Image (cartoon, rainbow, N blue to C red; front, side, top):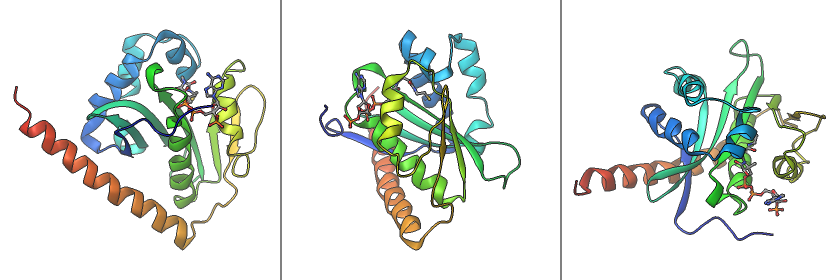
Length: 191
Ligand SMILES: CC(C)(COP(=O)(O)OP(=O)(O)OC[C@H]1O[C@@H](n2cnc3c(N)ncnc32)[C@H](O)[C@@H]1OP(=O)(O)O)[C@@H](O)C(=O)NCCC(=O)NCCS
């Protein structure tokens, strides 16, 4: 149905100081995508509150960047007590970048991180009419179990394996290089 990841697109974890970039991305979502992402219509202020100071401490957020601008994200946030083994995941890809495989890549990275954190239950709230998200989750049906109304995923390999840890470290290594390049680009960009 679609091409590979868009040219020049990079996926990496967000740094703790990138809350504003995450907020700007969520604010840029078109009306329908915003509704799907938050399970209903939400005002700009609600989004700003969502991305408060603590989110970057609590959550693991992967970002999809093109030319240093964040156009997609996957948020993995623990639910309840620190070692409860439950987390919530939410995905957002800006409209021009949808249907290019970005969501699939973000979900794959999120599942890997969840597994490596010992998360056994991964909750994804998904509106009943959100066929695209349901289709995306179905691609990972070996790793996820579904429920109606909201997609409730269960990570089938709750314990990290050496291979899964190395896979995450490798993707982080790639991400660090790109983050540094990106920071350098912004630093040297003429104003
Ligand atoms: C849901 C979302 C994250 C998916 O990201 P994406 O980058 O568009 O997804 P992908 O391109 O990886 O496509 C995933 C699957 O969706 C399906 N899909 C893609 N485009 C579709 C379309 N226009 N209509 C229906 N299904 C579609 C395909 O089956 C695809 O699988 P394939 O690769 O086997 O063809 C993204 O569309 C989005 O941000 N939507 C708005 C917010 C939202 O709904 N968030 C989810 C709730 S948390």
